[in-house]
Image (tube, rainbow, N blue to C red):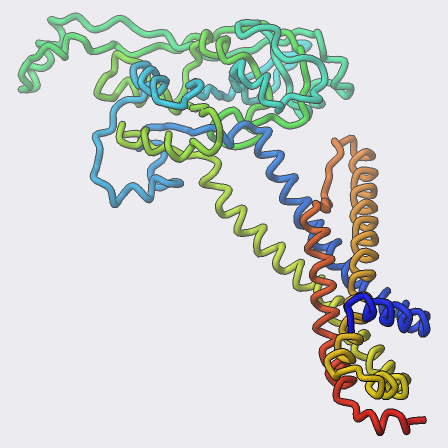
Length: 462
């Protein structure tokens, strides 16, 4: 029997018991819909997390720090097996060396410091972060209220929305207003005279050398103020360095932050270090050309004696969490489809009892046992195919409803919209294929039972 004949017979038989077959097909559709709805929720949440992290600009970034800063964190624990490399200072020379590495786009320091902001004469404690000019092109500030910095050295500020609400109940009214940044400026003290250094060394029983004359006298901290104009308000602060999202509530151009020479905790380590006369960075952020090159650049940095960390290290655990989450969602979603497969078995077994005479006629006309089995097998596949398309449509509508309800709630809370459910094309194909496979598996027993019918007994059946 040709496949075309089998399809026509299967379609005719399905139309005869329309209500029963429609309910069975609907059951398959509901099972597929539950599977699609649950998987789309997991995929949507994963895409939302990846987009947020991608917009932060850290997928193509590497954080470089002295080993004493990152000891025992991230990949630093994996370097214990390697031969120890002398750790050098993370100073301007190291920054220039890192800039010369292949596939490196830019290298800039992370400048974040707690300070006080005065607006309308009222002080507010907050954290200020320097933002490089390249952040303008990263997409992290798309959709912000106001504008990005007019220039890399402009005395301007972008406020995080929560901090802006502290300054004013109407954050948009802050645009164009001025605020005062109060900070502690680091000023280097002159080096001690050579004679004093030598006499001190001699009194301590330490031989004099050329380096002792170059020791710095340390630094002093002087309070300063800087007037900044508010030019923008951003919903969430994209991570501009190590420390994650949301630490900086007032963002200023990186060049302005460097010009301020704010005293930070690593200044004390620098003053007591091996090269006290040279300023050092607490950490540097390296931008590479594309995320796929992060691992190669990290491998080039480690022999220089520094510790590296990238967001790809942290996202490995995140991928595992989402993989387990998707697996659990798929298992629970598949339960309804498995239950629906029992309906297929019941429908086809009932069809065998009702069509025993028809089966006997077909066998008497020369139909082989395999042809009878294929007929019921095709009927199961047709129900799975129709149920798969129906289930995908219902699942997409459920996901659309979840997104709509979520965004209505977020809008009422004055929060930006999100896409928490997503149905990609591969999920549509996988759901329909899985529906057909489950239906065919459910049709194995009825097809086998129909093929084993004795034609004589089938023709005598009333």
